[in-house]
Length: 167
Image 1 (cartoon, rainbow, N blue to C red):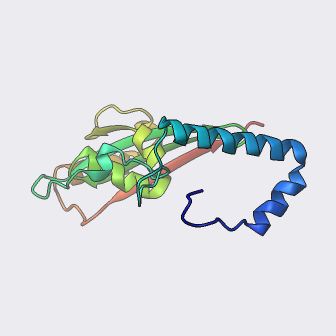
Image 2: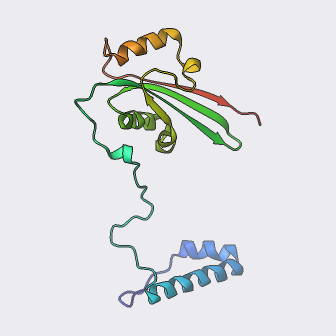
Image 3: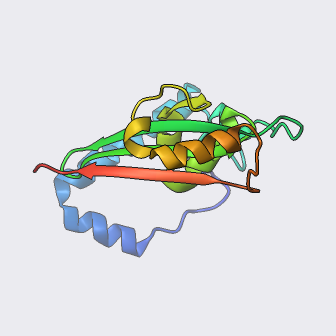
């Protein structure tokens, strides 16, 4: 601690650590000693005021500006989520957007930014993985009209999900 002010111990944390036993206390003390050595040697600098080391850096598509004058098109996207014990989930999405970044932002609102970042995305209704499974012929016709700007709604987003757990 700095010389300016004596640090007050946390009784709650002290009790918690005491319950973990002497080996855990020795490990914690060794860690604190190493941290003090790193600071004293200048090898590590303290965080700056307001710096948050846990703040996630946004993906580039999360911070781009929307191209207001660009025509809206249908974008398709698919991503797979495999989790041990939870199974396999495949997401398929179709939506109106001005560019791929706007589509990913719409997708992220529903499935999270990590999965949205990993999604395969393409403009238009051409050949695309799983599109025949998730888009009926009637929906495909409607989406083609939307893609051409015919009677397109103010917004449109379709998300299909297939989940399987074989545990």
